[in-house]
Structures are given as structure tokens and as C-alpha cells.
Length: 329
Image 1: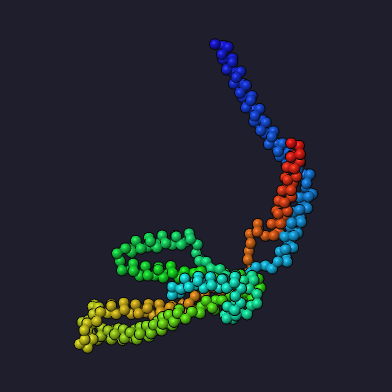
Image 2: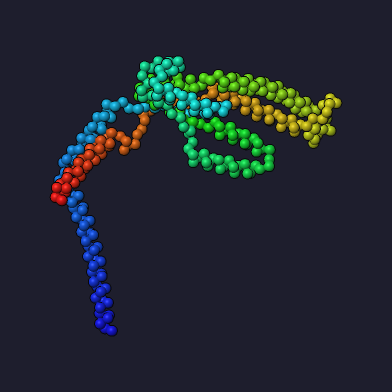
């Protein structure tokens, strides 16, 4: 019995010893690998430092020689369900730039002999996350107005908003003077459309006519209210009531008159706002200034070229190492 316990203890000690030896061997191999890497970097330190300095110099020089890319951002809002038209016309302009169709740009007032460096892009201002959040809030809002007359008005307003939220048109160019003219002429071309121009004219005529009619009705309502006030002073029998008989005519609901007056005033304000907004097919919210296109630090030449030089040196060193090993086999 004692002999069996002794054998078990000795076997456990052997297993632990082998485990510690394996762990120690692994650390030793890892230390040797770091040591070889240190020796390699130390041996080639001057070469690596020279390549880094050379790469930085080349990248800096190219940044000075190469013309910087500029851009102008224009925030716009499509009106009259013209969002699809906006995207189509931007694609048309970009296609003409790629095709180097100088005649097209001469027709819109741009006499450029070279279209290189010009680009145009468009994208929604709001990202997908914000749109999703707004849609959820919209659904919650509809639930709170369930089975009421306000739902139709909310749906109509929301649908109009969904079809006309803001977009960003970005113009890219190299020459600041030409770029500004390019953006202005292109925006003028985008806002020239016979179909939508006709719609805007009709909308404006309707709004102006509605304002005139509402003002006329307001004058009549004010006259009725004045007559009501006079009748209140003359007759004590009408005190405490909200209805009055004027010159043997039908009874008038004075509370309804005030509600009608408020609705007419709101409609006039709405139509004035409509006249202010509906002046163009694509409403320009903000026409930005010229700015330099910002690139990430890893995309700049001053970082790219040192990495390229170092990568090439490591690749050559690895190939030479493989060549030496192949000779010893």
C-alpha cells in the first residue's frame, strides 16, 4: 500500500516537471523570437530610418505639387414631389461630365474646355438611423390620434415631408474660381423645368387668390362682430347669450364667427408661407462656400509612401531569407 502511494507521488512530480519544462520552453522560444526581431531591426535601423525619411519627403513633395481637391456643398429641398427629378438630373450631369460632353455645358452657360476634376454627387442629409427613429415616432403619434379627424391631416403632412426632406448636392473641382461658377450654373439648370415651373405658377396664383378671398371674408366677419357689439350695447336682452338677431335676420352664432375668423387668419398665414417657399422647383436651403476636401490621415501621401517603402524593404528581406534557406536544404 505504501509503495503504491509512493509511485503515485513520483508520477505526479514527473508530470508537473514536464509541464513546467514545456511552459519554460515556450517562453524561451518567444523570447528568442523577440530577440531575433530586435537584432534585425537594430541591424537595419539606419536603412529603415532612411526609408521613413525618404517616404515622408516624397509624400510631402507630392502634396505640394498635386492640386488639392475642393468642394462646394449645397443643401436643397425638393418641392412638388420633385425628388426623383432631382436625382435623375444630377445623374444626367455626372454622366455628361464622364463623357466629356462640352457641348452640354456650353448650353447651360459653362464654356469649359476641360472637364477633368469636376464631379457632382447627391445624398440625403439624414442618415438611415435618424429616418428610422423618425418613422417610429410618427407611428406612435398616429396611435395617439387614432379614430380622430386629425389623422388625415397628420398623414398628409407627413407624406409631404417624407417626399421633400433635405438633400446635399456636392460639387467637386480643382479650380476655386471655376468651381463656384460651375455650381451656380448647374443649380440654375436644375431649377429650370417647364413642367414644374408651370405647377409652381398655378400654386402661386391659387395661393394669392385664396389670400384675397380670405381677406374679403375677414372684413365681412369683422363687420358682423362690430354689429354684434353694437347690438349688445343697445339691447339688454342679448346679455349672457352667444347668439344675436340683426335687423330681423336669422340668428348668428358669434362663437362660430370667432372660430371662422381664426381659421381664415391661419389660412392666410399658411398661404403667405407657401408663396415664400414655392419660388423654385428645388429650394436652396444653404449654398455653401468653397472648402478643401478633407482626407483621413491614412490616405495622405505623407503616411502612405513611408509605409510603401517599408513594406517593400520587408518583402525584399523576406525573399532573401527564403533564398538563403533554400541553399542550405
